[in-house]
Image (tube, rainbow, N blue to C red; front, side, top):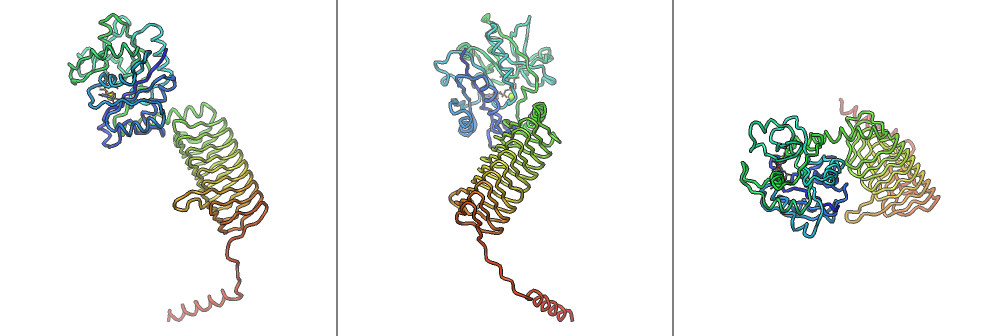
Length: 449
Ligand code: UD1
Ligand code: MG
């Protein structure tokens, strides 16, 4: 059965006190709407429509970075959730199959949960609503179930005191045949406490038509929506708690799990050790047996088998660390491939470079990769030895097995096996240090009189 996703993202997020559309706030390095799209995307939908309002262009840009084929529908005025879904109509012309409605500000719905909703559809329910048992039902819509049939959803503002005692609540996620959904939405009115077109009203309408609505239940954590920065921080904490537990269950050792921060797509191999206070930005993979030492920051990079990174290392996007390689303290790398067994142990910046296997980059080495306008590449061959405090002025090649003398400013290529020296030659002035010191001490004694 073909599937479309409709993601509602037209809310203003007024409690964020911000100009950024709420759905673009990030949890684990991905925008809230990105999480919703990933959850829905796991079902391989045929179409994905995002309904935007405030800050629509910005939202559209982020959506297209993740899913270029996603369609954007504008909701000019926020007249309610049913009205929002109706805006997806143009983007779904000619589509026949199921639609799942998700909220862009609700990042934790699991793909498995959406799968279960689809199974309920296959088992004969015309509309499947995702519900949860709320610890504090507050302002959530209440699911009215009679004889195992979902007969109605009532918004808290419109509910009777008896209905308010119900704890089975509406998450907002709905799965139904798109044509049915569109037809029901067209009949929804706005005669309610908010004067809004409620998507939830489709349940009562469907029941009246003799159709069957069902509730699929999920854990309350999955339905957590974000409306303020405090809730955003709580969502991040919830995500990280889960990510740490998963990393350990999958075979990584976290010395102090509560101090390690993962991105939504961090992948750790088996027997990886992550020491305290490590931050993973998006796009990091770490192979088996590698160790990420304390206070390191990694993003957009790969760490090879058995490699050791840190403490205090910063691996920036485009870094690939080879097997058994070493990156030590106060080393920054960017767009750099470090060969197997190679070492950059102390105080270096290596950018736009390829470092061959088993090469050794001395303390304080800097690739001068940027001339203010263009970026240039540095190549260091296998087994090369870059002396302490070498400036490699790119574009430049240092050959296999070559060396540079400490303190050199290398502006020209160094052939294989050669030693490049590029610094002023040393001159010793016999006795000059002693004479100068005597002179200065005499001056000091005279001034003290
Ligand atoms: C909605 C549900 C409620 C449910 C709750 C779960 C309705 C009528 N009520 O209430 O039953 O318990 O979610 O959190 O559906 N949106 C638009 N355009 C609009 C209005 C909303 O895109 O015109 C989007 C919002 O950005 C948000 C989502 O739809 O992502 C839900 O809207 P919101 O105003 O938060 O609805 P609730 O009152 O929370
Ligand atoms: Mg809400």
